[in-house]
Length: 311
Image (cartoon, rainbow, N blue to C red):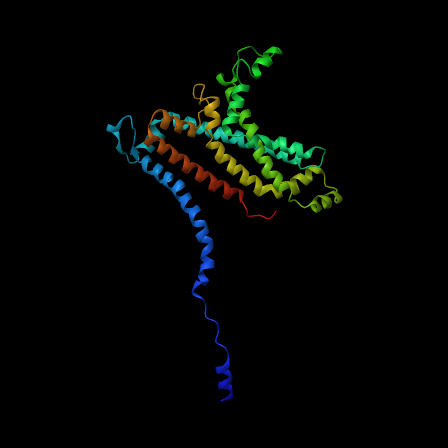
């Protein structure tokens, strides 16, 4: 009886409040507006592109509009020689740009990571081109490549080349000229990401390597590069996607010319949709570009084993 009385006197456990689930739902409620906006601004255009890729849609020729099935895709792969030419040039553009930007960006990051007088100013000068918009970058380089007031005019004053030479109008020089213009803005992107990762490397590793007699070159290959692996993989992937979709610089500098020498696949899509008003075929080309980028990204991440190894 005493034990039963003692058990009866024990306070009942507090009841769980009905509103206790609210804190767990609160994060989802807070991000819901942003999620809905992203769904509206990203999902709807993507679905629209897939929809129009299966249709003939040209406002200037409404009598031909209608369901096309896979005709637009068959046209791209079997009937349109410009598709393969622009795709080949896009691959060339991405490989050259990303490779050179990585090389120069890594070199700049290693330099500004050192301690020297005026390092803050040096970093600001290295990173400043990345703060310039793409349109302004294009305008700057259009002026620099101007045949009357640009670089070639001053080189002609020094006896190098001839007056009136335009690097952007010559098929032999237009590609290097466009590459240099995009390098100016793209290199700081790699320098910023790599420098941020460099500053997280423990100095004890370098001190231990020096004690063991390792040279600077061996320290770079055995300490620095392994630590930068994930940063390099991520930055090259992001930059490759951006360079593949690069339209503003080439459109402003060359317009895809001369003679279509600098026309990338996205630039060809822009011409097809904006100039020719063939939105159905342009949507099919966009879908193909999306699949190519998705496939290459997955393969690249798998082969590079991104995030799978310890630094």
